[in-house]
Image 1 (tube, rainbow, N blue to C red):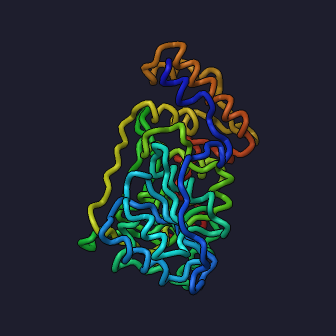
Image 2 (cartoon, one colour):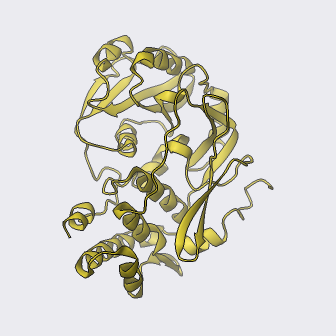
Length: 331
């Protein structure tokens, strides 16, 4: 019971539900050149020997603001870098957080409408982001535009993700085959061009979900259920410098949290709700004791009731009509 009580005593409904303890360095000067009204949030994976080069590349693009986010213990040269790049804001979390929560932390510093989220290991020699590309991505007018992504050997990675159900199991199919404006359930590795206002209105990433894969999927599935769109752009390309991170999609406790918030709710007339009758099917699926399952279920039901009129569809309808959007290019 303790695990359930700790993780879901309060399901956040607002973006600023958790304040992360962090140190803040730099950002005291204005950028030398601003070519576009876009903030870049760069998540650091501790490529220490290339950090100066990475930030030079980012500054040359002409972002209005650059925010570097990292775990406190990751890098030891951040103070030096904050002097070398005084226009860049460096945020170092002192709490144990996921990379999703680092994005939440960075979004707190954003005062532009649009945000590019990248990792340091896609910001070396191959990295390009121009004002012309920014205009194209803004023209999508959606929550998140996702790039094509390649390995360091220039091999395409599967970046088109499709939600589907096989019998009673939820699955995500991936594909290398994309066209411009193709729907995708979520961006690969969170890489994307975001509408910051929509990100905050959606509540950001749920810090009570501890597994990074389900934490990411929770936000982006919720975005689709609440009427937002996530599409691919064939003009937007990023390449990894090193190894490509692997996802761990184990159906653990975090999956149960995702399941309750996204897969169980049904859309009736003009709102979403969790039917009381769905408790026993959840209990059978969860392998939890009765009291623990009831606590999880009740908290999720309260969260869905609080956000009931933000739902525009449910998971069944979303998957049945996936890819039928008239705005998507012909396959």
